[in-house]
Image (cartoon, rainbow, N blue to C red; front, side, top):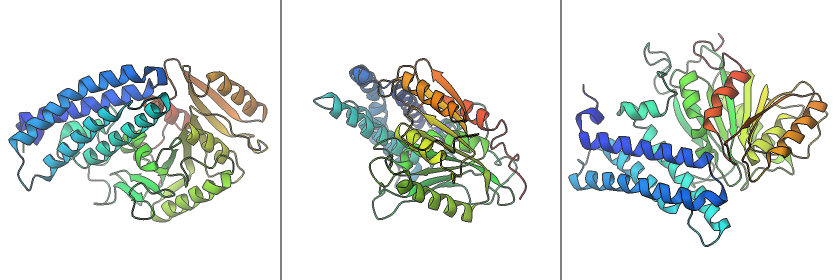
Length: 363
């Protein structure tokens, strides 16, 4: 059977343009500086014009009532066009920055819609994988039907309610193995449902479970780690009761306030994490008496405008004096943003064989 995106040139163009725009947003996010917002907005709006045209061509041609995949693709394209229109709106710098966060959320919603089309469009399938990687288990039927995928445990009726979590279980998941787990914590004003996509490619490619909790408030309880920490423990226990998790191979990471909370949570005596990889953050005012022997890889941008890199250097020195095994990895061209390309380095530092199926241990 010829894939639809090959047989239909209109869909081919639509898929290519949608994925290209997501790549442009990804590039913009790592260069995000308040002073750069107008320039980034102009570029995104210019590129969005082509996507808007592709959406209109598909709408004008029409889609059969039963073409759910085509309609999902059109929905994703519309969300990305909206994201470009929202990016950088506002009368002042604060409003513009908040609009950027709303814009990125629309891109995450588009990714969630597109992910359901991986089996329909090979290009979309490849977008959610690391380069040169096939989906683990697909070629030999590993895993049980219906066991893998994205799962949301969000309280209440609001799809962006707070205090729950999102989880990705690789398609290769089989309960006969124990699986590594990455816990990824969003930044201030963020949500686990969105931050999940920051790590999904690696989880899907390498075969580890991915847990993205959501803070109970607009950001993590940095003044009282136990407040949100208790919830993270509950989420972890629930996931471990449903899936065979290797509790000795849990990596805790996070961005900005999520990285700060990851440090505070990961330095506690009862921390479940084998290692902590905070990104673009600061060291919270926590007791360092249990820092001895803790493995920490701190990733920070040299161009970080919110938390200057000198603060990260001083924090790492303090952690080292307290006995932690800490490394500081400075990304020269990174602003206050999450560098998705660093996920590979983080995983190789954490465990050179992290999540390589069937490297997950036998039960």
